[in-house]
Amino acid sequence: LLLHAIKFKALKVSNLQSANLGTLFGVYLPTVQHILGVTMFIRLFWIVGIAGVWHTMELLFLCFLTTFCTCISLSAVATNGEIKSGGAYYMLSRNLGAEFGTAIGLLFYCGNTFAASMYLVGGVEILLVCFCLFANQSEKL
Image (cartoon, rainbow, N blue to C red; front, side):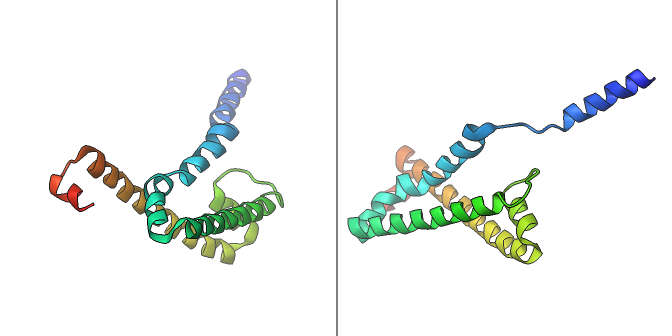
């Protein structure tokens, strides 16, 4: 009976281990996909045409600076304590407290909602332009 209990406990512990995606598939690939998504490949040339090359470079530098400061701040928060499991929101809310966690969580939610809608619009635009699914609609683009 004791032997079965030890086997059951070992089986239970092995089932609780989470999947390890590693640095490449867990961090690098989703980040690059997010950065080089619909905005970079569809709207960048439109922005250059409207704003000009120099203003587009200024805009990209401002985006880079914002992303860089966010990464540095998140790295400082991540190295302050022990991180068990969870995503970026879990880490920020546990390290910074309930007030900051709620504020950041709402901003995180709004950002992901707007990003999802932007990706959907970009995907539909690709379908309309490349495959001409609706001939009358694609002429307006």
